[in-house]
Image 1 (cartoon, rainbow, N blue to C red):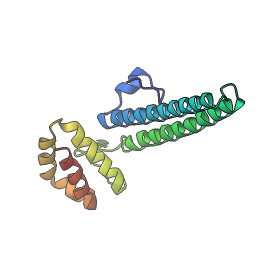
Image 2: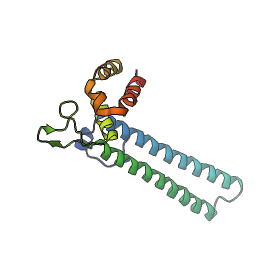
Image 3: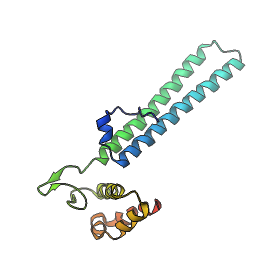
Image 4: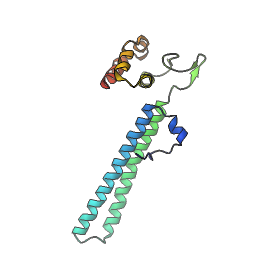
Length: 163
């Protein structure tokens, strides 16, 4: 898969974690689907115009431009959403007098509940590739129960869905 939805250098791609890479791949897939649908729509339009003896009509040019503009707008929405997700994903990477924020060594209690959820989720996604070990480790984490509060069960359900 060629990734061209956002422009990042090789070192910038290397700095992305597994969740961020997954977000980029999903967004690239959405972009590819949007462009494929637009091409299919243009092909159907051209075939319809040929069948009705309008092949050299300016209708095709105008409609093709409309289809391309709509596809570009959809791709921009996907791109902006991806950039927002990547920026949101990297929240909490700074630190305090105890060092950089890192769950569970130095959790950041200034984050909102949803941001804490992302931090803990990233931690457990990076710990191991084995979903069963990940779920077992999470279920024994007493800090996560207090740190996440009501989101603890949500993350548990998410991690259990990978098993």
